[in-house]
Length: 108
Image (cartoon, rainbow, N blue to C red; front, side, top):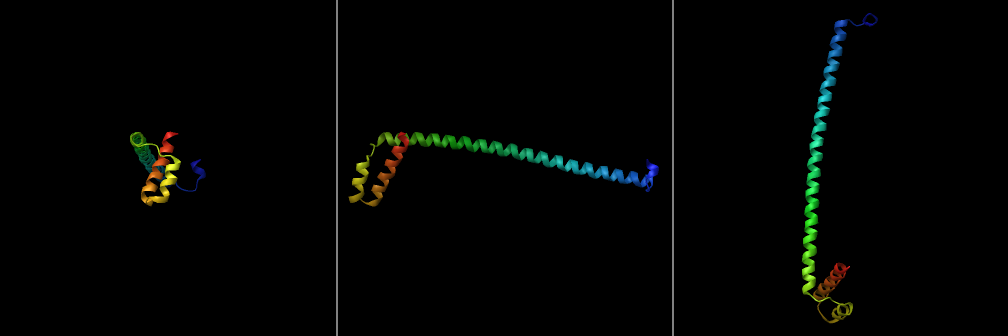
């Protein structure tokens, strides 16, 4: 087989060795990149899980605080909100309206 080739065996051996060395270097670089990406994925998954747990905890605390606020204030009826809109300042009626909407949403 080597006799069929035009290049000398020494030159072919050097070419094949260089080719093998380049392939190994490329393979090692790819393996390193894969390891780096695995670490990044692992870190991002941990971070995402941490933030998800914090968000759930915050929602739980917010719901608990909302229940406390609702239990301390009387439920505002629709007629009370409509009646207050005419004579009172816009800030107090909008606050009452926002509380009323929040109360309705939490009672579901």
